[in-house]
Length: 66
Image (cartoon, rainbow, N blue to C red; front, side):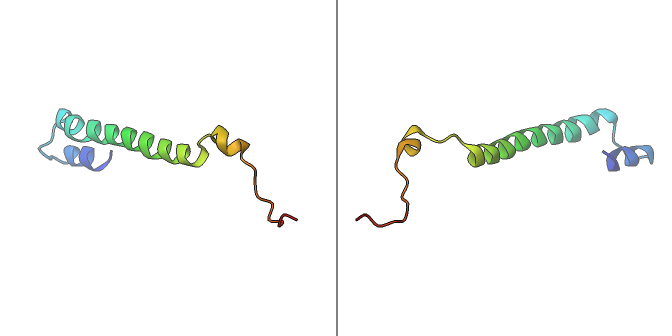
């Protein structure tokens, strides 16, 4: 967001269309896909809903049966 426009102001042979087409659009799409994928996956794995079988299963108390 800073280096390419600065280079353009200093005379680099890059147009605004080149900058948007070959830099901003791919970077923005990559950030969106990566953010949704990795953030969504991390949240799903962390907070995934419990299944009914796990909720109904007895939990061991650690006390031996008599």
